[in-house]
Image 1 (cartoon, rainbow, N blue to C red):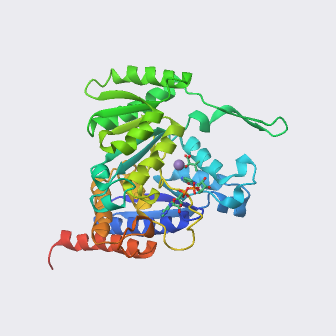
Image 2 (cartoon, protein in one colour):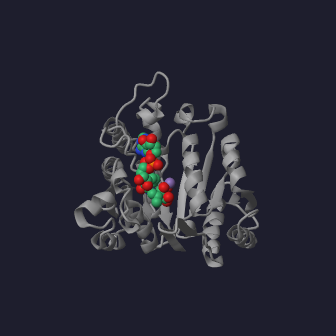
Image 3 (cartoon, rainbow, N blue to C red):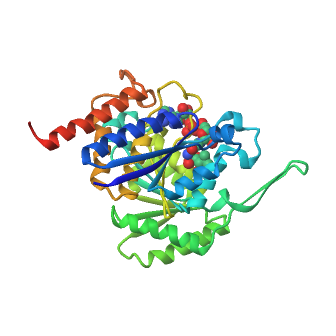
Length: 365
Ligand code: NAD
Ligand code: IPM
Ligand code: MN
């Protein structure tokens, strides 16, 4: 029996909705395996800016540093568009990732057997897709200096910079992960144009020398975007920098049926951050129809990575597939004759599946 001490940052839009759903699932899996859950909820994003005048209050950050894991729903609000950069909700996310040192963002994209029909691709192309994007998360264009918008001059600058050390450590994460999977790494860059990518490629090749059992290929990002929809099964571990990883992970989500079904783990720092890949989805916020599966899968990643609870993580995954197999679908993944359900009904089914498997585990009375 262990303590699952989690800071939950609901954030904005559908963030609080999927976070509430995730907390029900976390409680259910903890009850089944006899763990205790301790949740502290804090503000982040636009909602934090409204309440505290900053998107990432110091109290939130302090609480995250003390936690066993951080769960984040989503940040972002159209009302923030006019705000200065530091006040924007997205700045909180970047600030949190950097402050906690979470440089490695793992984004598994696996087409669920029960969800092949929901893929943006023909089922025969999507079926069997099982890849992980290893996205560098605390460098690149997102953080490079200078970053300037000089309105008077009509000129703006962002800087793409990586050091050997930054590429080395993320490459190691990818090679280690590949060893636990199909031993294949595709490193994605734009080495035909960018110096940074040439550095990336040479460092990744050097680190590959330490992993002779893992096969490495380099691929230019434009081709990778195409290969991903032509032959998604060919990928195992996709290693790439911050911005390319952001873009390719939304593409991978479409292959899996919806942006709503991918979870992620941001690790490598003092505390891990676990968040669905999707954003605050302002177009559907407040309607009770957000797909909570990305949040559930992030919770599964949290159980495995932050707490070392692998069986518990698998139980969550199985409960999700179980709900799909029972025909439950939120509108984003409903197709044809499916009658869609809302966030709550889908969550009920996942919680029930976890509770029933507890009965099975105990055996007949
Ligand atoms: P988005 O991910 O919020 O939404 C894109 C589309 O996917 C929308 O049509 C939305 O309805 C749908 N979608 C997303 N999540 C869904 C879910 N769980 N269930 C069903 N459908 C879902 O991306 P966007 O519209 O480009 O951005 C909106 C805001 O979110 C922006 O402010 C952006 O900065 C922010 N954002 C935040 C994060 C994050 O917090 N990690 C990630 C991406 C975008
Ligand atoms: C994501 C999001 C964020 C990113 C934004 C909101 C800063 O798109 O987590 O994928 O680009 O990292
Ligand atoms: Mn993104």
